[in-house]
Amino acid sequence: MKVLLRNIVLALFILLVAGPILAVLVYRFVPVPATPLMVIRAVEGKGWDHRWRPLSKVSPSLPRALIAAEDARFCEHHGFDVEALQKAYASNEKGGKVRGGSTISQQTAKNVFLWPDRSYLRKGLEAWFTVLIEIGWGKQRIMEVYLNSIEFGPGIYGAEAAAQRYFKTSAAKLTPAQSARLAAILPSPLKWKAVKPGRYVQKRSRRIGAASGTVRRDGLAACVI
Image (tube, rainbow, N blue to C red):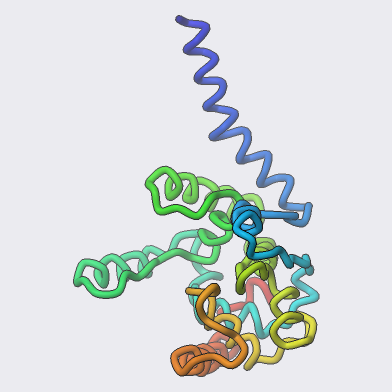
């Protein structure tokens, strides 16, 4: 019984502590070749277009647009935005459309290491990986990995693939308007379109474009640009 218990504890340590720490250390330096979501979508027949680009090869307008749209306090928090979580909770308690309070760090942890699910187990692991990448990667690396792992459409992953597919250009040459359009479709990339978008996405893009100007003026993306 003692041997069995020791083996169980050892297995849990490897699975929940040593394994995640090692994975985070490896991806601190190595480009992420694939994510669980990419594999799932490929099995579903949605294709796979993923082209890694370093942060220096992505137009600064895209990180600004993503910070404006997804996580305005990205450079200030340490992985979790308590204020955003409180607002999301209050909004959800009132009923109506469910809001999320996930930061870019949390989304990156989920995208790279975990599966798409809303279970408590997955959320718990997401929090653990978020702490690890905040400590082990820092903001620039988190943003770099985020830019290369986001799902921008069926089988389209990362800034370079999205720029090439939608605008026939490289991620380095994305304009502020194009970046705002990409950021605008993120809540529902399999449904919304960056090219010939509907009225809602057009309106959302304009709002993100204006907010991106604020991000630039106030230095809210200074930790990555």
